[in-house]
Length: 478
Image (cartoon, rainbow, N blue to C red; front, side):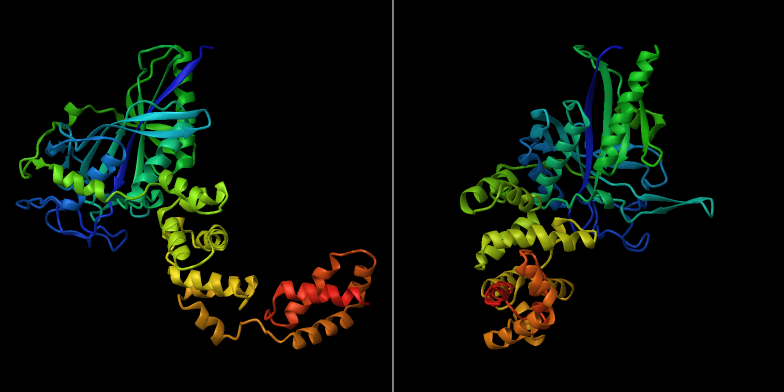
């Protein structure tokens, strides 16, 4: 069998985080009753005219600058004509001839080492509506809430060679866009979707093979599975003497295979022509300078600063900086006086656990920094122990409130009376002669049970370190 090389390029659609749609004032909020975020413009009513949302241009150009693209100073929009029920105008306003960004790149890290993936272009366009297929009623319904939501489409060069390359590229692109605040890039809500263009060729060949496009795959796991399947399918076709057909495929993640949707269209099939209802787009030096000044500190820069400024492990730094919201929370809590190491432990431990239990990501964290800072300081001051602090965190996570007030109102502070603690320890020793005997026979772990019993009797209002110390001293004198 011949050796084959996989060649992959991506078209990544990202819904931008504007409050209103690209050409009208309707809300872009996810969800809502069907067809309630609509108006004559985004439902394609005759006589309605589009007006470009400036924020869309700001976000698109910012993503271009962050991915080393050239920004097109004189641009325009074009009409992409096609007929489909979720496309109310029977055309989509997009950019073909003069996209806003061109000739960029991102650098990625893969198991095989560093790789640079070129970006052919980034263009702005409007999203279509959504078809809901009702098998019970045997019909399809159309929801136009998403129609007109602003998109950028990032078209890569065919520089990727494996699923690992693709996932690394998507993660880098997603993190860049999230750090910019241009989109939440939530694959599960469809705000980031990828079309995978894949072909195979004999290893060493210069000419590209015939590509197939897999549409709108919305999870990294599904993308990796689809790539592995389609690579194997095309190799099987070639090895059996056949030819790969250029077509658009849909990936069935449940069944684990691709199947044809339609033959692959070219630009001529869409009869593009300049959008007559929008004026040309002129981008000035002042506009771009303003965007450059607003650029955030991206993850790589933030990681390097953390290495210099904080005594954190590499894994702690990677976890905290994996989401901008998490990194912002870390820095705000530390600025309020909390210990950086303790802050990192809380974020990477209990905070991530609580987010996971709610099915949320690190970019969804919303706990006020002052509350987490106070909680960490309460533990550091010995006002409450760590176990009590975990319970307090869960309470203020569900019902945000000042942890100091919560501890006071619920009587959770550690009892400072060593006399009371000593009395409880004596009672615990007297009530557990077997554990005492185990300890005397050399089973030092028996003290752990006695500590637990003491903490239970104290209702958590004791310092575990003090309990352990006093218990050890008492046992040593027996």
